[in-house]
Image (cartoon, rainbow, N blue to C red; front, side):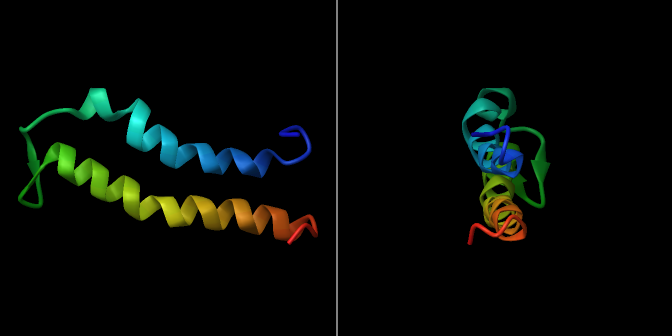
Length: 66
C-alpha cells in the first residue's frame, strides 16, 4: 500500500518525534525559550503534527482519493 501512497509516511513523523526520539532528548539542561529541552521538544512535535497530517492529506487529494 505504501508503494502506491508514499505520502502516508508523513504520518510516521509525529510518532517518531514523540516516541522514538524521546529518550534521546530527555534532558533538563539546556533550556530553550525558558523551557527545559524535553518540554520544548514535545511542544515542537505537537505543533508539527498537524503539518504532517496536512501533507498526507494533500498527497491523497492530489491522487484523487479525498
